[in-house]
Amino acid sequence: MNSVTSFTRLKSVSGPNRHSTGGRGKRKSILVSGGAGFLGSRLCGRYLEYGCRVICLDNLSTGRIGNLSHFMEDPNFSFVLHDVVDPIKIDSQIDYIFNMACPASPPKYQSDPIQTMKTNLYGAFNLLDLAGRAKARILQASTSEVYGDPEVSPQPEGYQGNVNTVGPRSCYDEGKRAAETIFHEHRECLGIDLRIARIFNAYGPGMDPEDGRVVSNFINQALAGKPITIYGDGSQTRSFCYLEDMVDGLIALMHGPATSFEPMNIGNPNEFTVAELAALVLEKIPSGSKIVHVDLPTDDPKQRRPDICRAQKHLGWFPRVNLDQGLDQTIDYFRAEAEGRHQSVPLMVR
Ligand code: NAD
Ligand code: UDP
Image (cartoon, rainbow, N blue to C red):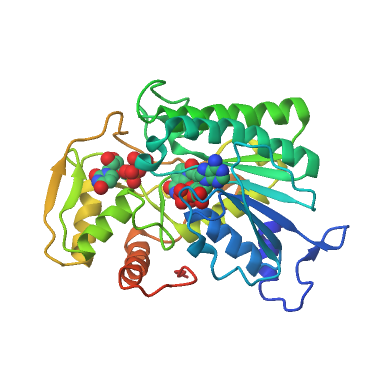
């Protein structure tokens, strides 16, 4: 039994020390850099539900304090306003670190490419340094973008990618690739206990409506009765993974067997064209929005679909929520956001 299973089972156990595990007999402490963002805030929420202590470290560049508002009163939660580009000094016990700090949306990471590179590179060094001092296990949020504009599909972890070093996406793609190398060498040379998750297009409640990614754009455009902006002809593909499935996968990887230190794809292999996504959103939100086609951004990947055999084999993980179900949850969330009704906890499909 891996410890994810025990985490899940712990949810049903009551009492203040329900997460007392291991020889030290203390609650586990989790640090989430980028914990105010879409994925990071849900990780914070999950570990608080498991009874852990959670430290969220974020510079609030794309994250929102509103994502954390429902934890702020929790005595097990603390927030540190900090940029991972700068060295991190935290002396308290830390058992697990999730390095989620980095804007994930193309318009956001391209708005300050040098800061994006620094976040990926200096952030990797600073968090690995912290992990070494704290003797913590660390998980790096890497990305499907390490495959660039892939020439094979689906993409297995062994595929080495097709990445432009000097295009508009390079600050992110090459930053994440270099971060994987920095992590790998810290394991090889210094014995740091680590995991690398290659995340494929996550979506769900908690996304910033202004984020600029395709799912948030299409839903908010449809809700407002505005044109749906398809970039290019819409034949490019993505494989969308619902928030709760993604967070399950990240937690499974963090607590998975020691053999899972190699990079691992975490995503949903069901592939859709962008035009199919637009049609599905319009079917669910019949507000009369028209489709408009605008220029395809430079280096926009033509296809993306994860091969998740490694995650299935090592972690027993696979996604359970299909796009139809996940979009319904996400639309409910964005509708509430648009109407000013704050949903404090992202909805789960189970
Ligand atoms: P997000 O933009 O919602 O969250 C990123 C968080 O990092 C924000 O809270 C932001 O304020 C914080 N941050 C950014 N730069 C920072 C810095 N220098 N110091 C401290 N905090 C900083 O993005 P997300 O979708 O939650 O993605 C989280 C992580 O997962 C990112 O590392 C991203 O690259 C990776 N990822 C996400 C996806 C996805 O589909 N969501 C896909 C691939 C990889
Ligand atoms: N896209 C689109 N319209 C939008 C936003 C994005 O057609 O309003 C396309 C984009 O060109 C890409 C896909 O949707 O092909 C996914 O874009 P996103 O920014 O969500 O993430 P990416 O996978 O490109 O990092």
